[in-house]
Image (cartoon, rainbow, N blue to C red; front, side):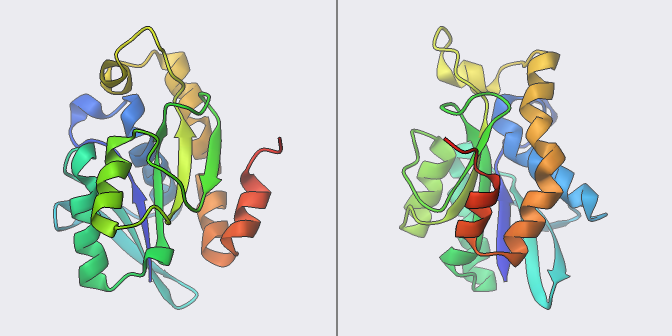
Length: 187
């Protein structure tokens, strides 16, 4: 069983913010599979499907970002999901807008959602997709990540979503090192 989590904040007022990049990505993937988030459990909206005989859960925690770990750990415990089978998709201030990076471990980088996940999972070793939202050092970081996003910037941020189906489908069928080699930009 695999758990794929898109991070964001619940509510219409946060829908098109930088912080909801994970929600938008996972929504795009679900739509590509004709799935909708109709199930609720442990303060999370989720849907599931089977791929090659394995159950896949797509989750959008419905607590605020800094409490995402509480929702995730409840799913992990209830469904008996191994940490190695968790894939987190989230916004990243240190990645350029329109860019992304796959990683299989690392620090939270100051991201409060990841801090809470790491607190509850007791590890920094879980697979992740960082979606670049850029960083405006002239603004307070909280104001920047949950503030209104100009349309052109939102379109650039969401450009990664065009690859959502390919990235997640490949994640489900290939080794994560090979996935990183395929999708991470060469430096």
